[in-house]
Length: 170
Image (cartoon, rainbow, N blue to C red; front, top):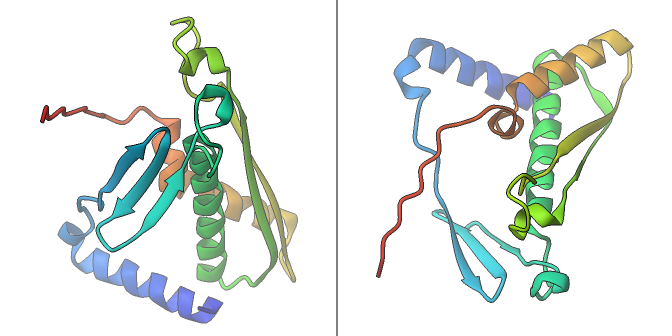
């Protein structure tokens, strides 16, 4: 889809949700993981599927990306998508966009070796390479900042969200 179609779609969605605010809130579609060893197949309600595996060093088969890599991939993809959406909405044609996400972890946390060491990443970094003809560095910085503030994946990781665990014993 080109920038004009993206812009038209975004404006249509904004208009619709402005007129129908009760339609803006919904339950997201679930992702269901089934495990075989440490290889996990995750499926969605519309046939979506992804596979993760853990490295051999912790007993996995190293046959697919780890869940942590998928998290970084989700951040990178979401940030890039929101940057492209914002640029299209503002009528800016990007000539280059690349988003890289890296992080640092301490495996002692995931292995439960020390309860003072976090299981998740200690920090994450989002690197953006962006270019557009006729746009200033300031305009591009504003687009990236706006996208980061509105990216649902980054948002869910940057703030504590209420999470429950429900267990069904079979």
